[in-house]
Image (cartoon, rainbow, N blue to C red):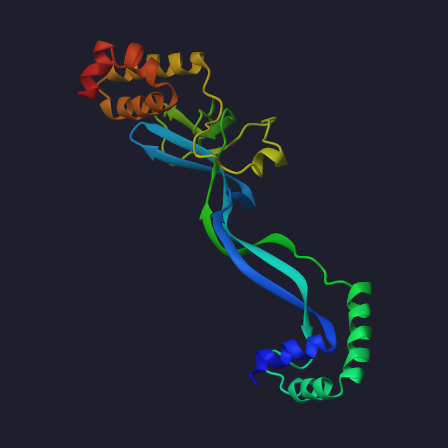
Length: 265
């Protein structure tokens, strides 16, 4: 007699039944979460002298990360089985044979078992989904110090001031007679970004507020003056900044100036 038949006979004659917990886990999908700012460092003010110009950059160095998340579904439920006749257990088979032979005893055992199952029915299937981090990619995500007043100090005591553009950059034209590398710093009273702004993750498309038009006009007049003197290196530096700030202004009003245009050829 096969094992399946023994199970049927055991149940028919009142084999002992019980609830058995079951569970199942499966992976649903893997996704990449939006970037988050992990750490913000102190503000950095750097100075680079190129020809007759000093380029000042202001930024906050930040560390960002993207998490790879895996969605896991866990299901739990209960089923009914005959004790000792599954999951590799063998001792239930001789018991089932005994219950078949001594059917009055088996009937009594089965009646009590069925009452227990009715009183405590198997729990239905319940599922829950959770996400766990399986990997993380770290990358730098510096924040430009846009529209901040900065000062440039020379060893002679002369100071110059300007406002950074949308990329956190300000261009100073060095006065004649000055030597050495000037030192840049934030101007007193500069309004720094809030903690919330510093912790806002990069989007890849948003840009800081632009430079005021009056500042761009001043850069154009300065470039025109330098172009007349033949200082095309400085003109090209200013042209690069203006193009990055306002491409439309650069095309319509900056590069159309004849003296500037000759330097950009």
